[in-house]
Image 1 (cartoon, one colour):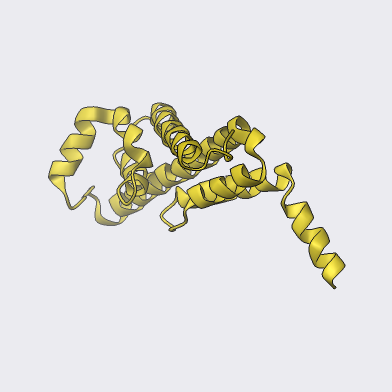
Image 2: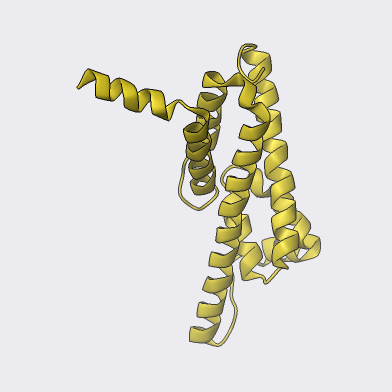
Length: 161
């Protein structure tokens, strides 16, 4: 039994599995489900410090894909509400005016805790253009992971070398 467990743990520590787990964690954490992909990034970089750039790319792609799913969920929810009630409604007109003013550029803030994930859904609800929103999400999310990895390297010099 111990040999089997050691084999499984060794397999999971391979970079391919670590990056796959990082992608899933980043994807799920960008939806409305709570998950901290940064913890998985720390694990991947602790086990494989040389995987810094691939890990940043995988985390960014996964997190952006999760944000895109949230955008589509918001778009679908708006469509369903509009069909049922024959009108489009959201509760905070001030926030909506702000989003409409900045447009897809507001998705740069999709990396923020608490408000970032709903921001992507609201962008879909408002029918902001999909691809520009995704591009701005990716820029913001990559900047967050890069900043996090830089801070991690400063705090724990052996990680993210």
